[in-house]
Amino acid sequence: MRVDAHHHAWRIGRGDYGWLTPAHPLYRDHTLADLRPLLGDITATVLVQAAPTEAETAYLLNVARNSGGLVRGVVGWEDFAALDIAARIAAYAQETLLKGLRPMLQNIRDTGWILQATQRPALAAIEAAGLRFDAMVQPRHLPALLGLCARHPDLKLVVDHAARPAIAAGTFQPWADDIARLARETGAFCKLSGLATEAAPDWQPDDLRRYVDHLLDCFGPTRLMWGSDWPMVGLAGGYARWHDATLDLLRDLRDADRDAILGGTATTFYGLV
Image (cartoon, rainbow, N blue to C red; front, top):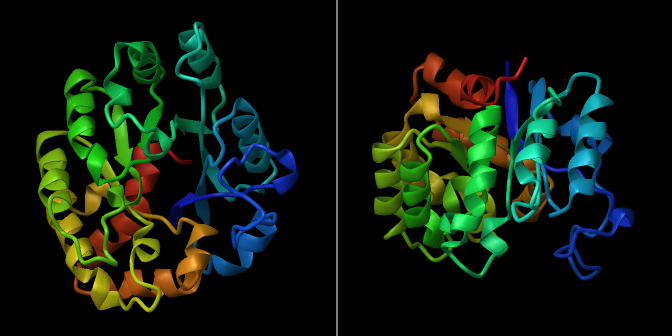
């Protein structure tokens, strides 16, 4: 199964995308009808939240239910500060299409927010429910993720967009050492996604190669999964360009390893059926 492990869908009229202003180049509805013509041989996807509301989670689950089997998993949002957070997460876990939750960590000023004691009930509930934790982070968060995994060793965690290394600036450290340590000392997974949007507008596959090779060395193919980050990838050349670049960057791998990154890892991690 070929899987796009990270994409979005939104309707502007819902009004809870605080970051998506009229000045934003993607300020319009983006639905599965827009995505389907781009998928090629991809037959399953994971739909990820883009707004910090429970209404977003309900909306994405409805999109998934009506996708004709395309969307096999949803990563939603929940208010970690809610007094009844454990009960809320347990209830969400009854939704077979809900595979995980994602607080929007990169938008929180406090880099160590996820390590605060107030977040522990939510994290414990995610562990208990067998859900996954998508870590929407920047390089500054990687040491905090190391601490998070140490405190919650049973938490199934995936780093979105490889923690967004500053590729356009050519910055490699300390991102490279920090993500290598996370891979080495924890069971975290990582998404091979979002790299094109971190590169310069005229990026070429070779601009990304150093970063992709490092992720392969750190996580290996069985802990690395491909995602488009559509429609955000439209700001960096589009779906097909990123997909084709990925195939180029992975061309020297064995077929089994390439298959893992392009579908097998996501299927296993998210429990897609």
